[in-house]
Length: 154
Image 1 (cartoon, rainbow, N blue to C red):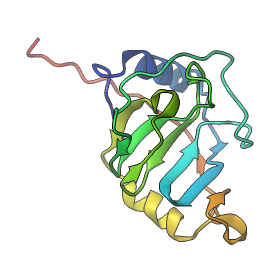
Image 2 (image 1 turned 45 degrees about the vertical axis):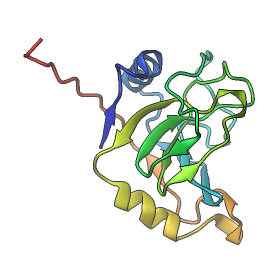
Image 3 (image 1 turned 90 degrees about the vertical axis):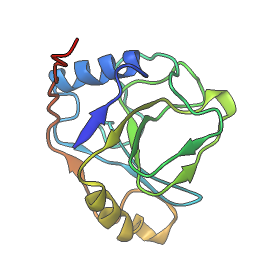
């Protein structure tokens, strides 16, 4: 389970919610695990190739200037193009220092339950023993459901 940070990353959360409602990630493999230097599990490309996108992109928001991404962070993956946020995202499973060149990576939420599952997948390593690539333990997103909580105090 994750908690989205709509106030800090409104465009990212709106896009994530839209894609979830469209079923973008249903039966979608997580295609990349990194176990050295940075510690992330990357998902969000229904093709499983790391090249899929929803047909649109947008810019970076809520990226830490110092590149610090604590365990449990949910952030957008992108290419070198700062306008390439789309459907791919990653879960940081151990505290990581990510590059800030090009603006960093948009933080749009945090894992509130299930980080132990991500860490168990990471403990299995990368296919073929590398430090970066497909997870040795295949994992897929079966469905994404967004639940909106209304703050009655407002």
